[in-house]
Image (cartoon, rainbow, N blue to C red):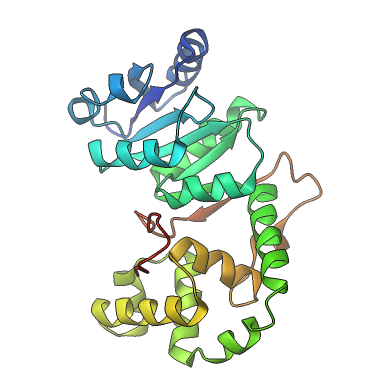
Length: 252
């Protein structure tokens, strides 16, 4: 059906997976096209079913979330992976997003939050709770505040590099940055490489968080409401596939 978001669910807890499947499928505009207990079961199904969104239980037993997210994206490149978790570690969330996940939903939220997250990531945006993003930024600020050289690093950035950082923080891809600034995509990539080198960062995710924490882009922390645990911020996608670990070599 036109306009329907096709969803695939990966969760090793059968009873909960079936309940989640029924809950999601009951929503207008959603269709659950498949389920799997784990990645091995999902692998042959994903290329055939071509879901728009894969909901992944990040709390599944013995699962390396980063590796699983990366693998799922290789099996169905057009899909968006949305993680479900009760984990509150912002650094773990950052690593999952860095592996290519389009968003993370706290299991303690109301179902409507999950439904909204599905629609947002399907539309090409990044979904994180405001309190989560603020915690990630705050943690980065604490780490970076111990480094007296950060100000001097920022001072080495050119005006053009600062413009590119601002664009990336908005979620623009290299091609879109080039179109806005009237430069080629190759030139943008060269600038991004230079920026990562100057700031000693590994990938675009770290660059966005660095930009938020050092005032090079507006931090979502400033948009928080008085009910941060129930409010969410959806940010445009920073990059379809953010750079993977190991931390070196740097990639634009």
